[in-house]
Length: 460
Image (cartoon, rainbow, N blue to C red; front, side, top):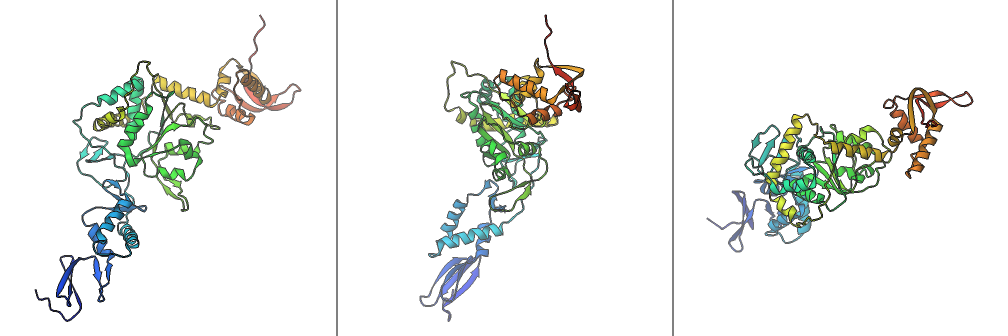
């Protein structure tokens, strides 16, 4: 090749490479196509060419400002290091600013709208598993990819099932299987959340550790109470399949409106990040909580709140139990088998139209939670009230009787307005009728209820 040229520097593009010829030393140097060399010899980076080169053989999308590939969220620090390693082969100054500039350019280059989450699809490390049983052995771009491979020939997860048999009753294991299957898909059709309660030391946290390994980026951890109290914390649920609280606080929730809506939500809702304009987003994270007691509400005594709760209580710890500190690691080795077991629970749940198999023990747990949540029902169900169609009682007399019952039982009485409102909301349950024309001792009309009176023992 003839290397004698009249110009100082000549750039020839060939096969995505720039050949820079220098007259003074009759030598030439080859640069990649994303390097520009000016007549004065100044080297700069062509951002378009660089992005094209970097992304030529890898599928990357920028969704909501976050870079993702087929395996999930890309660590930006690692990508910065990769960019730095590439450009420092040719550039020696302004490295930090150039890396940041190229990262921003890549985000603009890869911008994409969020892919739609389909209820019938489970994205895995080796392909796509559908709820109808079909498996496609090709990875497809998604938001939620589980850290597990599908192997239909995998054996039963013996260690995992043995662990569950020691943790829960047989019927409750079936409920857990369905709920864990429910977590696999982005859907809130089940309209329920699950709590596992115990006194401590039973091994509930082992289940949490196993699920963290399976769901990885599709799970978010935190305090359940913050969902209701912190409007910015709710944004953490975006694009997540599971919210896990493995240390549930025993304090009552000050309100339940947002939690109830999230459990049953099937339409976009408003979420807000700090210093950003709020916007609507469909959330489908399901709640899984471990603690010493069930979730309780400070003011919400409605059936609408309690009916959403599935509460499983663990077995007592055997006195001769030998603790295996490696049990979580051993169970994680069975996660392909665990996936098959969980998937079977999902199929059963779907066939049952998203109605969970709930044991009698679990129903009693929910009833007990409702009783602990509001002691008014215990008052009405006790021997305090005599129900009679022709009887009537003023609101003042009824509430005074309730507060006296609370003092006798060393429990805190609800406020008068709460008591009256609860009685109104449950009057059909007890065949009561709220009225503003209950007669008092003076013959006047006052507020009260028809259909009951205070119970008085007959003299023997």
